[in-house]
Amino acid sequence: MEVPILKQGDVLIATFQAALSDADLHQLRSGLVQRVVRFRSRGVIVDVTAMDVMDSFASRTLREIAHMIRFCGAATVIVGIQPEVAFAMVQLGLTLEGVATALDLEEGLAYLKQKVAIVH
Amino acid sequence: MAQIEQIVKDTLPSTNQIPERSRIDVASELLRELVAHLRQNRTQLREEWVTRISETRLLTAMTKDEIFAEATSVYDSYVEALETGTFEALQAYARNLSERIIPRGVETHEVVGIVLLLRDVLGRSLFAKYQTDFKKLNRILDSYEPAANRIANTVAVGFVQERERVIRQQQEAIRELSTPVLQVRERLLILPIIGVIDPQRARQLTEQLLRGIRTNRAKVIVIDITGVAAMDATVANHLVQTVEASRLLGANVIVTGLSPEIAQTLVTIGIDLSKMNTVGDLQGGIEQAERLLGYKVATLVEPS
Image (cartoon, rainbow over all chains, first blue to last red; front, side, top):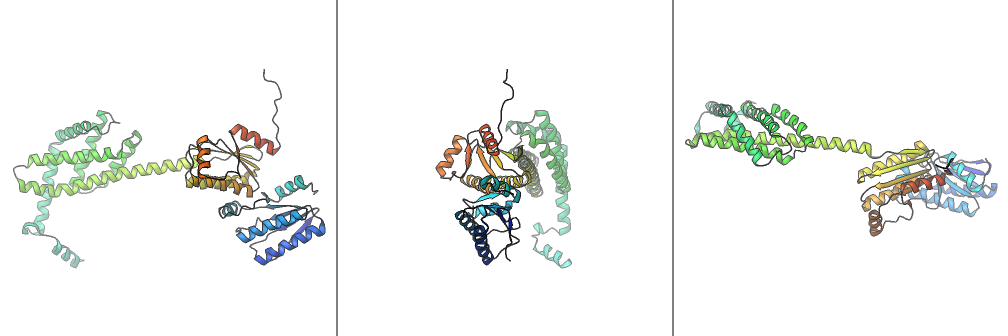
């Protein structure tokens, strides 16, 4: 299932609906980067609230997305990681180093507002 | 059923060729005699037992009168258990006794010790009574020994079970008390940790913290480990993981109050604390947390 990407002013919001296949994740990666360039977005929020499992591929892809978007001149924040998922990720060594995280969508927006002075 | 009984009868060694029926009669006869003997000499045997208890310095946590009172009840329950061959009453009494004496610091070896002493005192009195009739002494011991062993067993098991129940209860209470997550300011949580952290407690701590972050929408957490005396590699690693997991939820963790000993242990084991934000004491931790949250504390009036 494809991940919908919403545009809200300077910000792009991608909300994971459920468990995603590897192909979906690849598609999300290219889709997000293309849109950042096209819309000249300042910030990207990836909402993973609905994910109850985060494997190494997904977490690596999230990191790649964040780094690629930074090269395109925007900031990324991952929001909504569940407590159990967070601890499981850490135990597997998937700590999303160098990637900003926030509690939920609201926190993510607040972070971007402060970080890249977006208007929303 | 009848067949089984027949087999049991056949396989049982028939001592002295006495028919089954009268053998049981003889056994219960002996037991009755034994119980009568113990009842008759109750005062003397009980006193001897109490003397032996104080001689061997058992039950030092209790006064002489208390020991005597308990000894009387134990003696009577003991004889009753011998007489009836049922141990429920004794079991209940043992449990009740344990409940009373465990809080006073009576140890397992003391309880087992006094029961064995009583067994010894009674055994000796039987020797003294039947020393002229060796055959009868043997038969009396045949019926006395198994019952006495079972009694000792019952009391010891009862005591240990009661102790374990108390320990379990205390552990539960400690666990419940042990990991408070406190909110000191909007979006600032404090997690004071006191005592020993075992892997189970560490897991519980992590759970509580991560849940606390969600429910309180916390941005900064101060974990204060001033009250933790020692920490091993497993627990230290768990702490690092907890810090990282909190970051994934978008919260900043400040660890305060690392004692020099713990710091040294961590450095020696080679735990990577570079990902952790550590501050010397709780006050410093809270001040830094306030800075992170954008608070500024100022005195309104100069204290006089």
